[in-house]
Amino acid sequence: MHKLFFHGQTLHLLPSGALYWPARKTLTVSDLHLGKSERLARRGGSLLPPYETQATLEKLDRDLEATGAETVICLGDSFDDLAAADGIEEASRLWLVRLMAGKDWTWITGNHDPGPIDLGGTHRAELKALPFTFRHIAEPQERAEISGHYHPKASLAGQSRPCFLADAARLILPAYGTYTGGLRSKDASLVTLMAKDALAILTGPRVLAIPMPR
Figure 1 (spheres, rainbow, N blue to C red):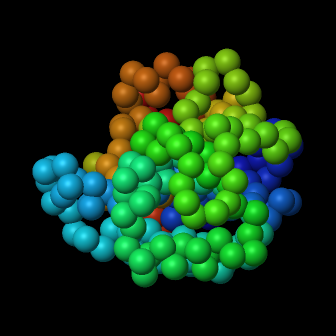
Figure 2: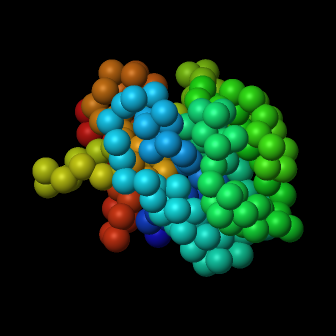
Figure 3: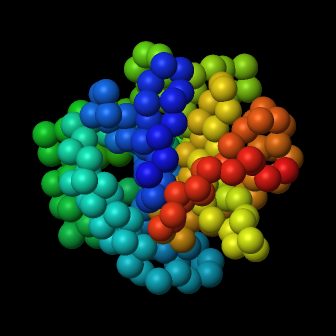
C-alpha cells in the first residue's frame, strides 16, 4: 500500500489498483469492464478466458473485506458495454448484488457504459465528495480530481505494470478489471495531462512510487 496525502486527505493506494479513503470509509475502483470476454465474443473479436468477470469480482470482494468500506464509487466503464451489464451471468449478478448490499454504491457513467444499469446503486455523471470530484475522464483545468479511463501503465526494469498517476491537481486510477489492457504513461495524452513532477505508483505485490516515465 502507498499512502498519498492529496488535498488535505490521506488516501491509500492499494496493490490491487483500488483507492481507499479511510476518513470516509470509501473504496474507489475504475474500469472494471465486467463482461469484456462476452462482449468480444458477441462482436466476433479475439477470445479471452471466460472467467475475467469472476476474477475481478474476487478481487473486489477481497478489497471490500480488507478495508471494511461502507461507500463504493465505481469510476465508469464498470461494464464493457450496456449489453454486457444486461447479459452478466446470474451467479456473477448475485455476487455483485451481495457486495453492494448495505453499502452506499455509486456508478459513475463511462464511455463504455453511458446509461443506468439494473443493479441498484446511484448513477451519476460525476460525484462531488469534498474536497474531491470523482469522474470518469479527467478534465485538464480541474483540481482535486479523481478519475480513471486511461488504464495507465508504467515500466520499471523492463516490466510494465498498471499504475496510479498523481500530481498536485489530479489522481488517475489504473484499470481494476482483469484483461483490460493499458496506456503507457509516455503516451502524449497522459504526458500533456499530468504535471512534470507527476508520480506513477506501480501496483502489484510491491507498490512503488516512481517519477512518471515520459
